[in-house]
Length: 431
Image 1: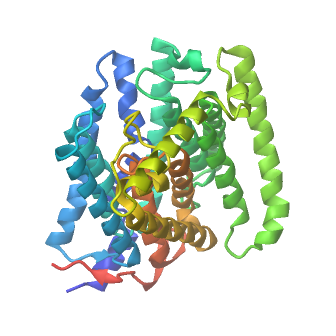
Image 2: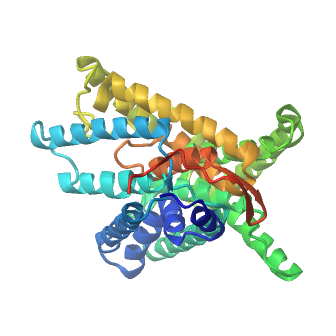
């Protein structure tokens, strides 16, 4: 039997397990991958245990559902999510056993990434986090992102910049796109701090403001140095949405009085940072951003065309989980859905995008305590269209589920104390 009083108590108390999953999806892998470069060992010594850790944490959440009934979201999103993942796992099983391809990693690695860091953590997010959990999750995510940024800086000092040949910041184990999204996440987390994170004392608050401002600029600098357009776009769109879509504020007025001035300010700051990076280093972010037909875009266009051709050969069931010539994913999850799962999987993914977009808008307009979750979800949504992978984008699946579930919950909050109109439980997991 569902105990509403105990469910209400869970809303009041932070859930560290859910908070850790939310934080790890943002920058946990980069944090784990930065240590090998620091100590000079193989990256798998840290990244494999990290993936096992995430799998264990997600398993704890799912095990809790069996031991005690809890409020678990089970709306239309779950049906779309389950349908897409059944198709994807069937595709993986078929490709690995019937039509194997010479892939970069063993089949077990792809399965471990898909299930252990994407599927199960996303399922764990069906348990809606309360305001206290969201507060703890932001603290962990912000701290983990700062730690990952620090680890990257140490790696760069130790081994130098690997991607000088391309004019983009990268390391031996972390590519420019991942570095760009780390910077974008750090910037977006810095400006979307929950109001409940308010230290006592004027000096403490001033110090926190200084840290947030420094981290915003540092994240923006990392994004620019990586010369990745997707993360740059995510920062601009996220900031614009954050200041325009405010509870009780006119959207039209916000665009003119807050949105456009902020865009001009951040774009100007970004341009100055880009010019400084290009002037004082061997990186070339300005050339990279202004050259729309560079090697990276040409390759992605080629992958998209190849994926589309594979889809046309098998439109209903899809053809393969990777593009057959370059053995790569097309860097767009909707095109990848067509290629790997066919029309039905594509339509289900479109439904997930629609629900995800509506949830982001709903949170920004009514849940200020969860605005940072909407920011990261928006970043993941944009990233999935320019560099994402259905089988490997843990941040996309975790935050797509998180925003839909949070938007569906009905917690009215004042500070940290929720005034419960209803603890959302559309359906309860049997048990």
